[in-house]
Length: 355
Image (cartoon, rainbow, N blue to C red):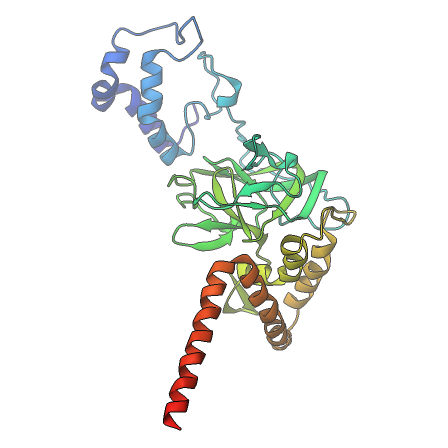
């Protein structure tokens, strides 16, 4: 059948060993064709027991399940249970068509899903609109989409597909990964656990081509898509942290992007001045296109030039970040400011007593 030795051993284990007899003996005793129950085409008891009892083991070792192995079988299953399998050992991809401007990254495919607060529930990214409130963390918080950094419904993009979540995103898009931080999708490995994915490890990774490029922005800089917590942003290097030449810095790309977007966020989210949005021919928001080009230029400079440019930028953005924090977390900000005023008042009293 073309299995590796490990996969073949596990497959035979599920149908011929003592553990299979112990777990599924009652369901499989005397069972033969038909493979499905005639009334509703569901799996017969033996096959259903085998799939549930041993499917996760098979997927963990072989990256395949019985429904996703690419092998033709006589068991009738719903089409949604099958996944296309590429058996080409040396796959090639055509150059990505992004509409002519080279902004193929920082996107999700149109097939990825988000959960909206209204009655529509879970919807495809292609159906998401400005102003829709979407789930942004596993605590149940919803935030409105104040912008699309990239939105192009007809352009083709190449994406990393991660299973079992079936999340599809560009290789430089940032993901929240347990014990690894916020890293580009291209750095995710088999066995990694994505935050919000129910603790299920990544079992299979492949490249796919899809029509549609979408990058919704929320105030927190994060969102839940396909049940996984992802960033709204990308890393311009295959690293969680910014590098100056070959030297890593403690500055994360998540922080850089969230800080860069502060004026955009203040104007469109907090002040609500962006009921519509303008995009370039490539589908990139005009708010994003300029900073994107500036960042690419800056990363191409000598580390000394990068450092000299970042210092005044960080000082300037600090003012915007403080204002953004006050507007985004008014309760915490009020407590903080109140504490400072109270401390200042006590200090004055102490000074008067001393005098």
